[in-house]
Amino acid sequence: MTGDRRGAPEQGPPSLWRNRDHNLWWSGTAVSALGTSVSRLAFPLLVLAATGSAAAAGVVGTCASAGLAAGLLPAGVVADRCSRRALLVEASLIQLTVMAAVCWQVAVGHLWLPLIAFLALVQGLASAVFAGAAAPLVRRIVPGAQLRTAFARAEVRDQSTQLAGAPLGGTLFALARWAPFLADALSYAAVTLACLLIRTPMGPDPAERAARRPPLRRDLLAGLVFVRGVPFLRYTLLWSALMNLLITGTGFMFIVTLRQHGASSSEIGSAEGIATACGLGGALASGWVVRRVGGHRLVLLVSWMLVCGVAGLVPLAGRPWAAGLCLGASIVLLTPLNAVFGAAMVAMVPDAMAARVLTSVNMAVQSCGWLAPVLCGALADAFGVRAPLIVIAAGLALLAAANHLVPAMGQLDRIGADGIGTDGVGTDGMDEGGTGGGGTGAPGADAGVAGSRADPDERLAR
Figure (cartoon, rainbow, N blue to C red):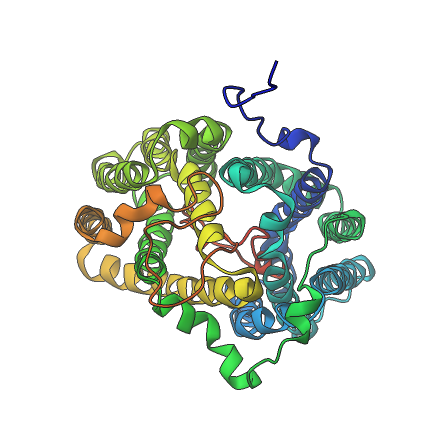
């Protein structure tokens, strides 16, 4: 017996279900995301009930979005310089305090709009800090070969909490107007505890902290400079930004078109529920899909499904349930695509600058979404509600065709398919290997203080 084991199969890493730190992170962010979904529905209802003004609710939502967008770049720099665990805990505690303050104002019956707007701004800034510190975390607690599975489970988490949060928020708001905000405050306590209990070092490592850093102003742009030097990331940022614009427009026009065709609020809600349920089904199947469908093929499939789904809304606008099913069928594979992009981003960004790169990408992509309602509304007023849907479908078709032609997207199957590694992917002289998340999000828009929370696994768009 020579003990030669060359023919013995290699054992892979243990199941993610046995990964203590991943389970803590997934559970804590799941509770936090459920709290967000609960208060997301209740917050605009509260402002409308207190002021009777949709503009007032819009001001609060704008403050939250402005805080998030303004804070992302600085948050990425700070997360690559300071303790990420401390940043996660401090940001969560600030968010807990904000939601507790909102709960207190509602409970005592003194809702002051300027204070609510200020709290929304603080909430957005804290969300940016949390997002920057969370960006490199998944890579540190999950083996490279399981990254796609981890991101697929994050999609299941997000879709499930979105589906459960709205009815729960409505029920709590009906029982007591302060109850949804108390629930959201407690959800921040859950994610704070999870961050404290995770044993894996979150970084940055001592050597990275000791290294000489460039001036702060230069460091703010370092993430975008890195993206510019990597063809795949450069194209992905542009493609995802345009996809985010078009998908946000689809979500807006879905509501407007159904309403213009006589659908009631409950019918529109049911139609959105059907679409969300389809997204949840895709999330549940994400692990199976990403193991069997190549990344490039999945991008092409999703791209053309979206074209068909948006075009199908034009003749189905008078039938809300059919329209919801059409939209849901077109987005069912978006969640597996998010998992693929997430693993690819992890494989390409160095840990030392992961937060700066991913928050830069996130900021760039999210900066386009706010244009969609304005542009679609102007087109609908000028040419009718069908015109924006036709324009969106045409834009999606152009992006789908580009994915057949641009070599960078064809490299997706070689990026991170087996974990960390970027063989064959050029970076124009930059280092490789890192963390993050990418992809596109299903139609939808956040509003109010609760809506400012960034995705903890840092997808490109939401």
